[in-house]
Amino acid sequence: MEASMKNICLFGFVMVLVIAGLSEVSGAGECGKANPEMEAFKLAPCASAANDENASVSSSCCAAAKKLGQNPKCLCAVLMSNIAKSSGVNPEIAMTIPKRCNIADRPVGYKCGAYTFP
Image (cartoon, rainbow, N blue to C red; front, side, top):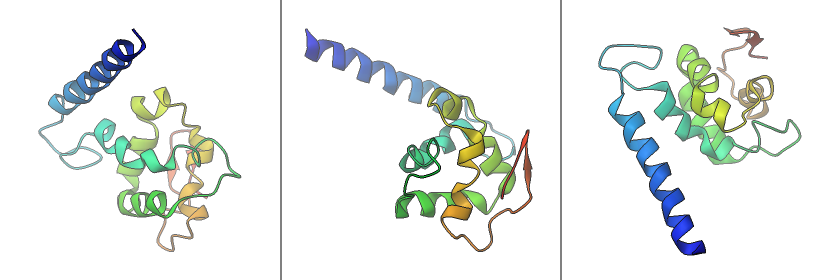
């Protein structure tokens, strides 16, 4: 019974990914042709760092943040996405990740909703 419940949950998660992938925008948005909801999955290694300002930030998180941070509009859209919200991301703490990664060309002062990148 427990194994079948895990399979049902896994199936549901895959379906969410497929549906989100099918809804990818065909025009240019904050992340170009990429859907910010799908781009949010690239920041999965940042999950603990996005909720705890004292958590260490992994190198894989920093690499993803650096890549998305090249487009501040996209990074903002990803951090404010429904996926990030439903994952429990604290936007105020998540905005500190580029600084905590010591990314030199981070979007300092960029306004993202009610928050600003430090």
